[in-house]
Image (cartoon, rainbow, N blue to C red; front, side):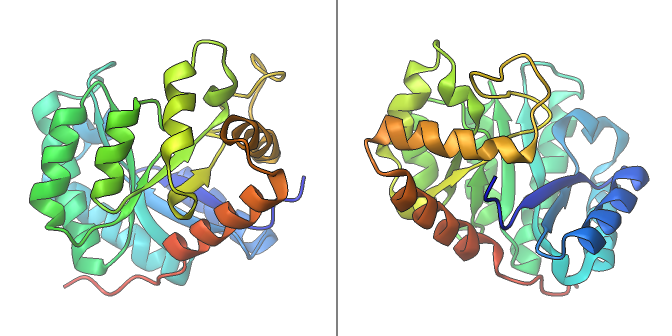
Length: 238
């Protein structure tokens, strides 16, 4: 499918996923990873334990760990109490600031609290990506103002995703990323099937159509943006 590099999101509290990540790295050395405590699992980690677990996983991964995430807030499902989600998110943003790694942000129906924590804990020093973006143009603009990238998945191909496509047109090319969110959100015409990394090529194609740009040019730009965000190595946390 033409995919040369990928960042794979790993759950910090899942030993099985961490083991799978090690196997994947052995098979495809160009793979890099992010590791973090998702808001759905925040209830399983008191604040200090969440940070400790992420630090340990990051150090075990060494230079292959290029981001902290997926972290954030999810007020749609509320699988974890909202105050716990905020505490765990806040702790991990602080960790990313300390070890100088970008973050992969998950936010759903929680934009006000998400931005508040990013501003309070990031202190203008934390960068990253708003993953699987589903917001409107104003949300994208606020993320860009904080220095973040914005990443689009197969949802931009859905007929009801007009507002997301509008946002995608406004993101500067040097802050634009593509992803699959596999195994979810397979793009049209694969919708309803299991998503997989190869289908990021279809996301690229759709995004080029939305933006009125050539596929080859957008491929080069998103590749450059990916490298700019993920090439940093972690510093050791104190």
